[in-house]
Amino acid sequence: MLCPVFVFRVAGRSCDVKLGVGSVRHRNTKTAMIWADKMMMETDVTSCSVNYAAPVNVLFVGDRPVSEELVESLNKNGLLWDRVSIGDFQSCIYNRKILGTVVFDAELLTPEQAKVFEELFAHLDRQDISMIFHNTPDFVNTDALQLASKTASTGYEELWARIESNVKYYRRLQKDLSEKKSHNCQLYLNKDTTEQLEMAGRVQRNFLPAQLPHTANVRWAAMFRPAEWVSGDIYDIARLDEDHIGFYLADAVGHSMPAALLTMFLKQAAVMRQTIDDDYYIFKPWEVITTLNLRMSEQELAGCLFATCFYGLLNIKTLKLDYARAGHPYPVLIRNGERIQLQTRGGLLGIFPEADFEQQSIQLLPGDKLFVYSDGAEPMLGHSDDTGQFHFNQAFADLGVLPVDPMFETLNRMAEDYRFEPGEIDDVTAIGLEIL
Image (cartoon, rainbow, N blue to C red; front, side, top):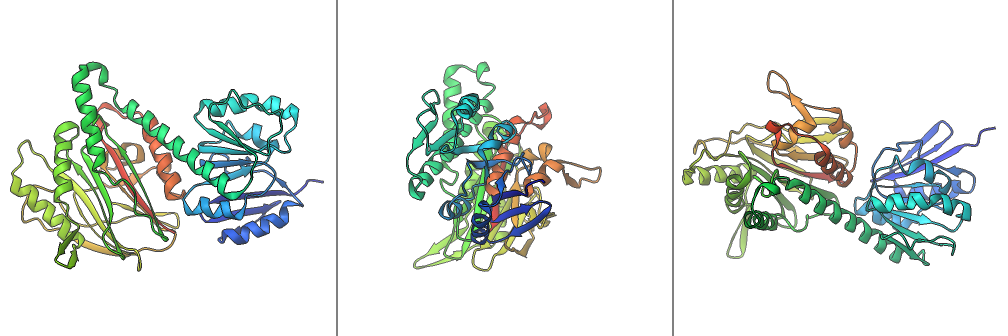
């Protein structure tokens, strides 16, 4: 007689619990944890056979449920996680994409299993994936693992601190690696020029937001990948007052140094709020775009320097989004598996001073995600038909089901691995938000 299989997976705010062929979806994480604790005594645990290819930031290995405190912290910080039994660790690990750390409960590990797992542990270490071992027997040797750590405590605070630190360390390593790969023309320039361009790239990054303004009901993410050392893209996401967050993505036509210089002008000219004495005024999206256009037109820039831009103003209390665009790719609203392009009228910035820019509004709902991108991302996300209509591919459809943080981590890996044709190479930038 076959034993029922219990599958417990938390991704964002939902949990799946399956017995045999039946399935119950719990929208409330705490309820699912209580139900899972009850079932744990009666069933075996596996998750390799279900969605084994889905990326995770944290993979728990062991036969005990994850504590409610950890579940709350993982979900609150937008970390995708899963759990597999020790018995399934070997069959799953080479297929599972881990973007952070592995937490290994080694209390029930046998000496024979520890010997077999040595190569699996080494494989994770070579992939820059940190491991946290707890309840670890003496026969488990981690001395050869550079990124492994042991803890005798299973308390929430220490374990969460290590998880958070390991995930941040992994992200920093991937960012450094990405920046090194993006500088593929370094061999053709002398050392002084290379250093100057690298410095310019660092200065440009300093103009990007150091921290994203997450709130209790809105989660943000961003990706910034210059085609060379510097980028023709610029973005900002800023808290304007207690109720409003303004955000934009602008793309100077072209890339490299001339376009990068124009982004500095756009950054200075994109005024989202004005303070007068003790009062202030938050500019509407059409006003921000119109002002940008006028200032660019007044400069009479040489070299046919133009730009595109999308600007959004989000009320975090009502979740109303006002937006306007100037020649920019239509942002995408992802709602219940559907992809809706938010279309508004507006031409390129810097061509006609009298240009008119349309403003639209939409009511966002819990579970919605908004994806804004520069046209450099288009080759890997879809294609345009003969009428100019852009169609997203299956890869983007798969991204859309993920919470916004793992969505952007996966997008960044896609951009890193994608082989752009010579005529397609451009800066790739994107920002996203998720209503929790």
